[in-house]
Image (cartoon, rainbow over all chains, first blue to last red; front, side, top):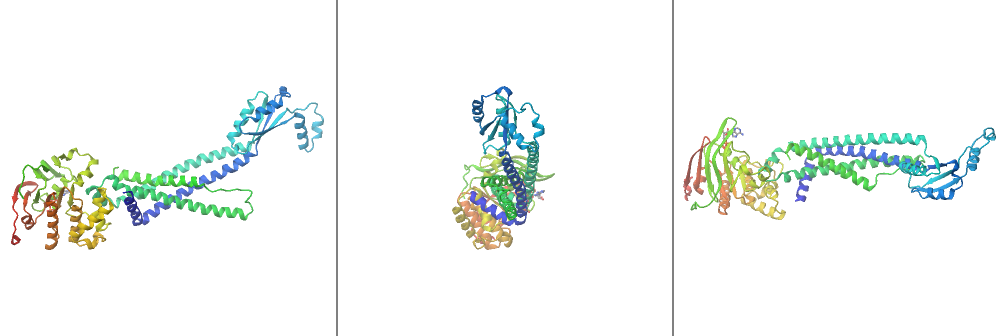
Length: 292
Length: 238
Ligand SMILES: Nc1ncnc2c1ncn2[C@@H]1O[C@H](COP(=O)(O)OP(=O)(O)OP(=O)(O)O)[C@@H](O)[C@H]1O
Ligand SMILES: [Mg+2]
């Protein structure tokens, strides 16, 4: 039964080559744009987490926290996501600071007292690079009684994050719009096909075909359009991606910028979504025309 | 051809009217056709023969009155029940209604596919009826490449292929030469002998006399007479 509908759908697709080609190209374009957005987003978050991984958290201790440092180190290191914590006594902190200054003498010679508190430098586990993770760890550290303040991240990272967030929202909105447009276009072309077959549909009804029997080939056609569109769209995107990758290689940036393409799972997901778009488009058209 | 009046009616009309807009095409029709009966609808062009047939397989609905097919009132059949109702019928449409984009074979096979039969059985039965109407040579041909008479034979094949309980034939020999007309009649007669109820709209008096049966005379949408005609064995009646 399915095989019969499938055969019919294939024959129909071939018979309406032009309309189908237009529909498939539309879906391919949509798939390409959406996948490209996903790809950019994936790579961008890759880079962001690379940046995050360099992050360390400085925990400044209360002046009276005194010497109970081993216990504190223990409790810091037991926080999830923390790789290691190194105690930096205030004297060492000052020495470091002096060493980093170009002309420290004038300023520091006059200091009667070391203004720095004792501190812990906390290194995060490499896998826990996401911003949320850093914030969570910082919060846990701050909540320790001996800790007066924590310092982490950089202002620009917050800014980048905000922008990324904005792009993500815009991207999602755009994808939603594109999907609706794609469904509408599939619905329109299917409508054309059904319209040209009203007589055929009527005859099928008169000889006892059920609505499901009549509609099945149309819906399969929708699924096929979605499938071919996805394969086409991802294919084009992959070609573009490969070209870009070659360019980066040639410019000797291979080590600096790492790019990755969509995973098999992601491509499968996009394909399924695309088939769903094709199916939905047909469904909308059928519902209108054949009073589903 | 003995009529057992205890046979149940398979088609029953009571006070059926049908109007196209303000034009009364059928007026107050009441009659019964019994199971496995061979009957004819006669009447001049425009008398309402096609309209009457369309009401039976529910392509159109009567403006008033009641129709029952095989014991079920058409008014009681939901939309989803229409396919099953229509599978009880094999209809030879006056305008054939073949699907232009599908081959002769596919057009005939459609009935069996829609009823969910197996592929192997479908091929066998379709080729068999095509042979009986002499169209097996044209199985792969599109209907537009056929003459009117050939299309009519395909329409006949499609009407009988599913072994329907009721065969409705609207001028089934209208476009046929003597030999083809005879083949179609034979086919309808075979279906009748195998137990189908056959209702034929025709002007063809020779046809009626050869087969014999009851005749519904329609005149301007009214039932003018419902009489029995005995079978004439001599072909000189032509
Ligand atoms: N769709 C329609 N709309 C309006 N009037 C119609 C329609 N179909 C048929 N009629 C009218 O109803 C009357 C009966 O038509 P019908 O087709 O039933 O006649 P018929 O007996 O089959 O004629 P013929 O022998 O020419 O096929 C005719 O006068 C016709 O003009
Ligand atoms: Mg007619």
